[in-house]
Length: 226
Image (cartoon, rainbow, N blue to C red):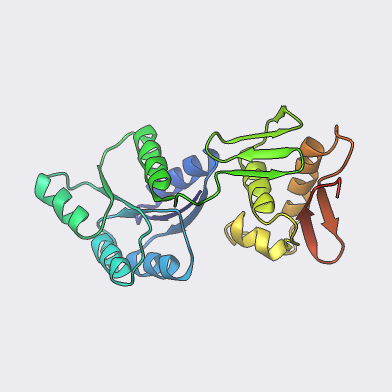
C-alpha cells in the first residue's frame, strides 16, 4: 500500500514513516500543506494521512482542494482538536476518518488499512499468480508450488510490483519510483541486493527460474515453463 503522510511535526512524522514502512507499506512524506498537496496531485496513493494543522496550507484546505479536483483517495485526518464540531468539520471537508491525538499506532494502522480495503474497486486484483508462484495481497502471503515463502517487507513490495507487471520489463527507475519512493540514487546497488535476495527465495529451490534479468533493461517476472 502506498501512503502519503502530511505531518509537520518531524519527530512524529519520522516515527510514523518508520512504523508504516516496517508494517510493509510504502510511505511518501511531506512536512507542509503545499508540498503535500503537490505530492497528492502529482502521484497516486492508496491512502492519505493528513495532519489538520499544517504550515503554508491547512490539512482541511489540502483535502478540500483534492476533492474539488475529483480526487477520491481515502483520507485519515490527524488532529489534537477532538470536539464533535471539529470532527464534523473534518469529515465535511472530505475526510473519510478522523483520529484524535494522542493515539495508539496500532489504531492508526488499523484505520489506514481499513480505509485502503474500502477504497479497492471490486474488480481490483487481490491475488497475483505467475506459473506456480502466488501472491495473496489480502492475506499478505507468498507461496510457490504450495510452499510458503517468507519475505521481508521490501522484498514483498518488490515482488508485488514485479508480479503486477508480469511479462513486462520493469526498469530500475520504475522500481526506484514505485518500491523505494524516489529516495535512492539510480546508481545504487540496493536494487541488485534485493533482487538477489528475492531470487534466492523464489527460485533457488525450484526447477525453473521465474525472476529474470533482462540485460541492459531491467527485470521481468514470467512463467519459466513458457
